[in-house]
Length: 296
Ligand SMILES: Nc1nc2c(ncn2[C@@H]2O[C@H](COP(=O)(O)OP(=O)(O)OP(=O)(O)O)[C@@H](O)[C@H]2O)c(=O)[nH]1
Image (cartoon, rainbow, N blue to C red; front, side, top):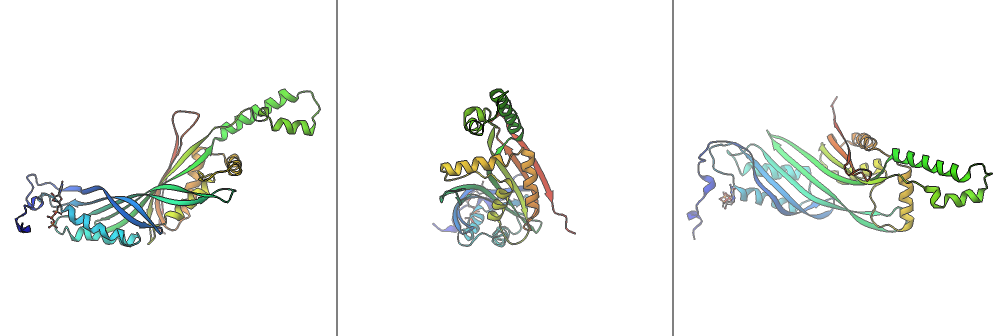
C-alpha cells in the first residue's frame, strides 16, 4: 500500500477550535543511562497544542525523539535537545514541550560494621520543560530513613528510672548487681517507638548536572539513620546506637534536610516533605519546607 493513501486524522481541522495545555503519551518504556547505570524507566512526553484548529499532535514524532535517551548519558543538555526536537517536529502547532522520566536508581550501600553491602532502590523522577523558550529541570527523589521519637525516648527513660527506684530503693548499690540489672528486661522496661520514614525531595536544578547521587548522600548524611541493606547482628547493634543518638521529630528531620539542601550549588529551589509513618498512631507525622535561592 502506498503511504500517501493512508488517512491522516491528526492533520484534519478540529471541530472545536480550542488550544490544549498538554498532549502526548504517558508510561512509555525506555532504558536510560543515569549515573553510569542503565535503568528501566518510563517516560511521559508531551507538547502544548497551541493551534486550537489542529485536530491532533503527531505522537510518533515525540516517541521517536526519545530514541536519543537510550544512547547517551542523561544530562540537562540532552533533555533540552529532546524537548527542542519535540518543538521542531511540531512547528506551528506547539510552543511548549514537556518530558518526565520515572525510574528506580539502584545504589550499593555498605553495612554499618560488617564487611557486607546490599542494594537500595531510590525512586526518582526527572521533569524537564521548555516553556516560553525557558528551559528548566526538576528532580523528585524519595529517601527512606529511620526516626526514633525523642518524646517517646524521654518517657521511656523516665519509666526505666522509676523501675530502678523500685528495684534498688533503700539498698546499697553494688556495681555487679547494677550491671546485671542493666542487662535484664527491667533495665529497659520501656522502649521508644521508631518508624520507617521517608524524605520526599522536589528540587529545581541549576547548572549542567543531574546530581542524584550527591543529593541522596547529602540527605542521608543529614538524617543520620538511613535504612540499611545487608544487616548482621553487629550492624543491627550499631543501628540501634545510631538511632539512640539521633532522636528526631519530623520537624527536626525537615530542618536538617532544609539546611543540607541549601548548601548545594546545584539547587535553585526545593520543596521537601518528610513523612514519619508513626508506629504510635495509624496516621503519619509530616513536615514540609520550601526554599528559593534569591540571587544577589
Ligand atoms: N494525535 C493523536 N494520535 C493518536 C492518538 N491515539 C493514537 N494515535 C496515533 O498515533 C499515530 C502516530 O501519529 P503521527 O505521529 O501523526 O503519525 P504519522 O502521521 O504517520 O507521522 P507523521 O508523518 O510524522 O505525521 C497515529 O496512527 C495516530 O492514530 C491520539 O489520541 N491523538
